[in-house]
Length: 474
Ligand code: NAD
Image (cartoon, rainbow, N blue to C red):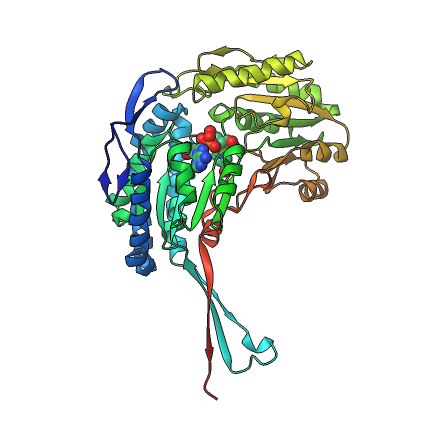
C-alpha cells in the first residue's frame, strides 16, 4: 500500500483504492486515499513552508535541487519507465521516452530558476515621473495546486512541479487516481534530491473528494490543471479568485496538401494517431487530405496501420498497447458503432478485445459524428477529403477545441497562410499535431483551455510582477 506524503511522512488510511495493470488486469497495489482533513493539513503545511523556506531560498539552491532530481530520474529511467508501463499500459519504448522528456523538463527548470528576470521601468516616460526609479520583479505566488491526468503521469506532472519549484513556490500534487504510483515515486525523488519535504506534498484521492476541495481551498494561490474539458470547466467555476491554467483536450486536425511528401506524412501520422492508443491530447484525430492524393494516402495509411504490433506494452516491439481501462475501450468502440450507424465506413480496425482497441481508421464521416466533433482519446482516426485551401481551414476550425494542428505542404507561402488562419494554440508545418517539445509555449485556445506550459511560460504564470519604486533625493 502506498499513501499520500505530507511533510515527508506517508499517510495510511482504511479508505483505499486498488490500482490495476490495464493490460493484464492484475492488481498492482492499493493507494490509501487522503481525507479532506489531510488535504487541508497538506495545504497548511505547504503554505507555512512557502513563507518560511521556499520564498527565501536562493535561486542557485532551487536550481541545484532541480538538477539533482533530473540526475536521479535519469539514473532510474528503467524503474520509472516500468512503472508507467504497469500502471498506464504505455508501451515500454514510449515510457522510456516519457522519462527522458521528464529529465529534460527538470533540466530546463533548473536552468531557468537562475534566470527569472524583471525590468527597469522608464519612470520619466510619464509626465511628473522624473526623479524616480521603478523596478518590476517576478515573485512566486505561494502554494500551487498541480492536478494531473493519467496519460503522461511523469512528464505532465513535471511540467507543473518543476517550474513551480524553480520560481520558489510550494506545491500540492494531486495526481490522477488511475496512475498514482509514478506520482508517489516522483515525490520521493524530489525529497531525496534535497527539496524541503513540505515544498511538495502529495495528496492522493479522487477528483470529487480531494481535487474539488483543493481547488476551493483559500490558501491555494494557483491551480494548474491538465485533464478533460468537463473537469476543467468545473475547476474554473470553483477556483474563484485564484489564478488558473487549464490544459484541456482537443480533436487535432492535420492537413495534407497534394504537393506534400505523402510517404513521410503517412509514416508520421500513423504514429501521431496511434501512439499510446490515441490517449494523447494532441493525437491526430482528423486528417484532411486533398482530393488528388486522397486514395494514395488512404491506401498507404491503411497498409502501415495494419502492420502495427498491438498487444503487451511490456514487449519491446509493441506499437499499440491497451487503453487505460475497459470502460474507456468500450466507450470508444460505441463511438465507432455510432458513426457506422450514421453512414461512416471502417477502413481498418474497429474491433475490441478487453482493453485493446485495434487501431481504427474511419472514412465517410461527417461533422455530427462523435468521432469528429468530440475528443475521441482512443486509437481512432478519420481520413477526410477536401478540395481547396479554404475548405481545409474551414473544416479544421469547425471545432470547440484549438490545441495543435499539422499542415503538410512544400509551398511555404501556403503553409504560413494556413498556419495564420488556424484557430490553434500551436501549428506545425510538415510535422504532426502530436509533436510537442518541452520548451515551446504549449496550450490551447477556445475550449482547449488557457495559459501556457513549457517551463519558461509556466514560470510566467506561476509568478506575479511586483513593482518597487524609488524617489531619488533631489
Ligand atoms: P480527467 O479530467 O478525468 O482527470 C484529470 C485530473 O482531474 C485527475 O487527477 C482527477 O482526479 C482530477 N479531477 C477530477 N474531477 C475533479 C474536480 N471536480 N476537481 C478537481 N480535480 C478533479 O482527465 P484524464 O482522464 O485523467 O485525462 C484525459 C484528459 O486529459 C483528456 O481530455 C486529455 O485531452 C486531457 N489532457 C490534456 C493535455 C494538455 O496538455 N492539453 C495533456 C494531457 C491530457
